[in-house]
Length: 174
Image (cartoon, rainbow, N blue to C red; front, side, top):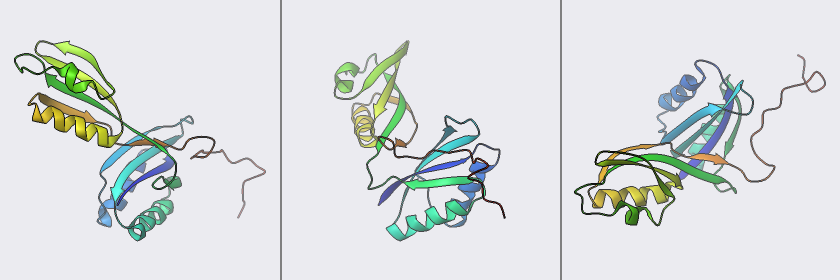
């Protein structure tokens, strides 16, 4: 089963390598991976998609929480969440005999540049829709290049992953 996991981690050199290394050492596969700073520049949000049984994903979550740079982990699968992908898609527009506009019409696609006989499209939507759109372009033999972001997720409403800087009242001393 596919799982989308969001991880808050320190925005420091080597943090991503430790996460990727943990997956590699245990033989887990990462289908897609996104990392970027959050509203707090000292914290990054990593969103990854992976597959596995509930037990395997539970083990992944536990192992992630053991990493020194990881602050929090949330498996979005099964819970209410928003999930989108961004893709830049280069297509051949001349001499193809195909209307790119007609192919793109059912999807949230905008043309963002045109150079010669090539157009670059921007897709924003769910991964399944992107897969269908790409298959349509391949079938029409107009797909030239594809760059996709992978899943980016967030829970709706007040719930979610938030880093709160520890205060002197909330800090635990050992």
